[in-house]
Structure formats: structure tokens, C-alpha cells
Length: 262
Length: 251
Image (cartoon, rainbow over all chains, first blue to last red; front, top):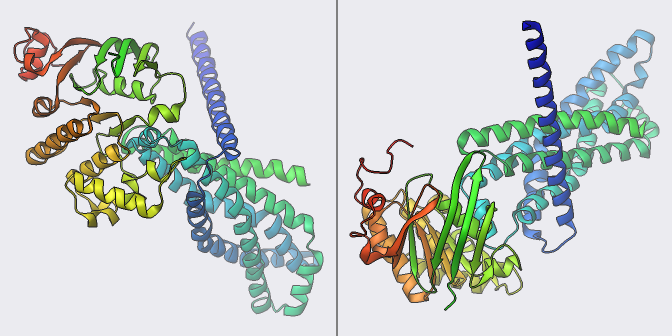
């Protein structure tokens, strides 16, 4: 009898979690669909869009650049170490370039931007919700979805590929600096190998990934902030949820996109 | 004459919490109605239902004879100005852009120079100097933020103004200043006003009529002159701030 009750409770908790997950996915999907539908319809808030390009893109450059630089350097050392086991040290420039452009540039850049931007968007919109600023927008005949969500979504989706591209270049440069100064590679040969083996598809797939990650980061930040709970605790929870969900979705969608471009 | 705002059988529940059980209320054109009642009795919910910020479960909301739940939203909202409890000023914008927010957007938007000039004029109307216009909300005191909120509420010269607890968090002198301003502005503009407050000094300063909401219904409504001898035990307990009476102190 006790065992049956335990099984019943266990199955009920699985059912509740599954229902809650399905409801969350539904709410996020509806939110995203509403935001995308507003992309096509005026009014367009160009000033807010420009501000977000600056906030999300320009101010994320240092963190993305530093991450890429050190990752490129570490990658060169690791590939050299692994390659040396079967006399393939020469693959360092090629593998560093491909790994940075196809995978590490967009993924690490996306995760760093998730930490910086998703949290910031969720905290800002959450505070606006708690202090009735979002209600005030409605009373002032301004659609909060258009004014707050659309500029952030559009800006993140468009600037993330640019950030990833710059990160790719800095990451390859990190590998180059380590390889030429620490591993005694010839600079001209390193550059030639990087250039010769890198294909357009490598760069394109990385940029598409970055655009998707940018969309995810802004969507999670906006969604959790827009529906933030009350008080400081509600905003804190929204911020945490935004970063965690954006990070997990970036990792998961990275696998799906890698399969698509494989 | 068609009343400016009319609520008929308005109901709203949040789960098992039946906040509005059946609200019936009439606010004639040009009158100042003050809604009083204990915390959590649904005063703000009623106000947000009128503005469409919360969807009622049932009932009818008529504004100037037309249903608030259908028709052109922008045209509907253009009739309203609202002073929020905490001001709800936009942190990222300077004061003048907060005040003229509505006028900087939409079909009939003003140029920046005109909007700035209008903002300065409205700020002056609420007793703030022109140099406040270029400050950010975070640089203002609570009383100044309320005044800026008031300037924003009246900037587009609306027909209806809502005041949500206009004196909450202010010292008695600043409360008196805000009460006087609210009264002056409502009279001067000829607007219809609906104010939510717990502050009895605000009620006496602002109201033409008073309505008390208790347990989701309008418990009492009447002119301000009848407030003290209404004969309603609920209203008497509330306005005299007595712990004992028909309203339970623990809710």
C-alpha cells in the first residue's frame, strides 16, 4: 500500500513537471511569435534599437575579445600537445582556425553574452515590471512588446554574428601569438595554413549559430524580465532564470545547428 | 447626461481570491471620485481593469458611453492620464522626455524642441523649476518624482485622470502640496478624476464624491459632504481609523 502511494506520488510529480515544462515552452513560443510579428509592423523605435546595438554589441566586445584571445592561445597549446603524439604538430593553425570559427567563437561568445546581456535585460525589464513602468508604457499608448522587446531581439540577433566574427579573428590571433612565440611556428606559414584550409562554410555556419544564440539570449532576457515576479526576489529569480535558460538553450541549439551544418 | 465612467457588475478573481465580486460605479463628467477601502480590497484592480491592464472576468466598463473592452485602443488610451503610486518614471529617460513621452510618439508627434518646451511648462505647473527637465528620475526626491508623474499625467491634456495613491510615501507637507495640485489641476482642466487612496486628508482635499470598496463590492458611495454622517458602520470605522467594527482588522 505504501509502495503504491509512493509510486503514485512519484508519477504525479513527473506529470506536474512535464505539464509545467510544456506550459513554459508554450509561453516562450507565444512570446517569441508575438515579438517576431511586431518586427514587421510599425511603429519602429529606431532610437531604442540603436541604443541596444550599443549596449549589447559594443559593450560586449571586451569580454568576447578577451575570452576568444585566451581560448585561441590555450587551444594552440592543447592541439600542439595532442598533435605531437602522432607527429601532427603542423595541424595547429588549421584546427585552431576551424575550432574557433565553427564552434568556440560563437558558443563561448554566446555564453559570455548570455551572462552579460540576458541578465541585464531580465533585471531591467523585471524592475520595470515591478515599478509599474511597463503598465505606464501601456497607459501612454506605447506597446511594451514593440518598445522594449523588439529592439532588444533585433539588436542581439544582428550584432551577435559581428561579435562572433571579431571573436573569431581575435581567437585565431591568440593561437597565432602562442604558436609563434611559444611553439616556434613560422609566422608566414601559420597565416598561410590558417587561410588555405578555412572555407566559407566554416565561417557561415559560425555566423548563423551566433545569430541564433543572439536571438536566444535576448528572448530569454526579455521573457523572464517581462513576466518577472514581484519584489527584489522576483527580479533576482527572473535574472537567474534568464541566464540559466539562455545558456542551456545555447548549448542545446549548438548541437542541433552543428548537425544541420555537418 | 452620459457618465464619463460607468462600471456594471465588474468581477475579477485571481484563483480562489475573488477580488472584485460585483462593482457598480458611476463617475459623471468633470467630477472627482475618490475610491477608498482597505489594502487588498481591489481598488487598484478596478482601476487597472478600466485601463485594460487587467482583463475582468465579467461585467461592463463604459467610458463616455462606449465599451472599454472593444474599439481602437490607442484612441481609448489617449483619453487617459495616470499618476502611478511610485511615479513609474522611465529611469533611462531624462525628466522632460518622461513628461512628453506620449507627445514624442504617434501620428501627431511634436518636434523635440516643442516637446521640451511643453515639458518645461507642465513641470512649472506642478511647481518644478525648468532645470529639473534635464535631470534623470534617479536624481529626484520622492516628492519631485510624484510631481513629474503628475506633469506626465496631464501633459497630453487628457479628459480622464487616474491617481493611484498620490500621497503614499510622502511627508505631510508634501502630501498637502500634492493634494492641492491634484485638486487645482482637475478643476482647471475640467477633467474627470478617479483617485485611489487610504489617506483621509487626500480624500477631503480631492473628492467631489467618495466610494468605499469592501469585500469586492461598493459598500458606500456619496458626496464628500455626507462622508462623516453616512450612517454606514463600515465607512465610519474606516474614516475614523478604528480597530473595532464590522471590518476585521486581521485579513
